[in-house]
Length: 294
Ligand code: NDP
Image 1 (cartoon, rainbow, N blue to C red):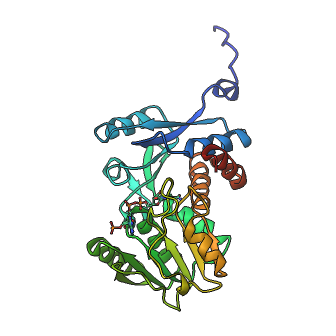
Image 2 (cartoon, rainbow, N blue to C red; image 1 turned 135 degrees about the vertical axis):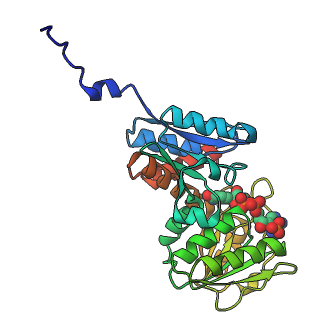
Image 3 (cartoon, rainbow, N blue to C red; image 1 turned 90 degrees about the vertical axis):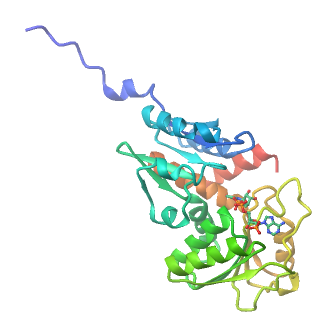
């Protein structure tokens, strides 16, 4: 019998094979996620990379097939792919299925599972300040971010969610979705004049792009005198983190939550699902602040 060659220990051989993760979006160039995720990989010595890919809508199916073929651990999907990617996946997590959009795909035993971490990232950031359970929430906007945040807040036990939006169709559809899919009460208010926040409100979330760089002087059309001390006022805008709305809310004694926290916590969630490692949000926030020069 021929002597067998000595086996190369598996761990040595595998050390040259990195875990591959990344993002499919268009445009991709202005998305700072790669900076924060790579910083976390480096800080925690995770042998992984994050590849930020510009993917056109008609190339998404090929990109997804490529990721599956190459054994990627998972990827983020951003604009304009969050809805289009859904039929390309094997299954959806509960909230992603209600929201109808996916921004994070995890490969589990070869199957592609769609998650939505937009709202989950918000909830994790919010937990630092307040438990979502029992809150009376107003969400400004009814687009992708508003939908994800409202559904996650409802699933996390918020009692009442008021959707305030200019477009009636989009706003009332979100309020209906919340009422039909969760145990929270929901109603829609059309945003056709300066919005006055009801006194019973405990959490106000700006989920519109108003205030995003470069239009940093813009402010959602809300009656500032209706913001009360102790109310939690959150903004999804990551750049600049201190929006005019948050500055005004702080002046009125509100507790504030910026959009960077939500972005960082989405990164923490994605990395945990892809690699099993719980990363340090402080390292990731610092990397984002450096990358965005804010
Ligand atoms: P969408 O385009 O899906 O939705 C935008 C919403 O904002 C719509 O409801 C729209 O109202 C409303 N809106 C837009 N402009 C105005 C305005 N001038 N006044 C009042 N309402 C307005 O966008 P997304 O939900 O995907 O994104 C919204 C913001 O959230 C972006 O700035 C994005 O950067 C941020 N974001 C932040 C994340 C984070 O991690 N921090 C994650 C995801 C998004 P209407 O329906 O009437 O047109």
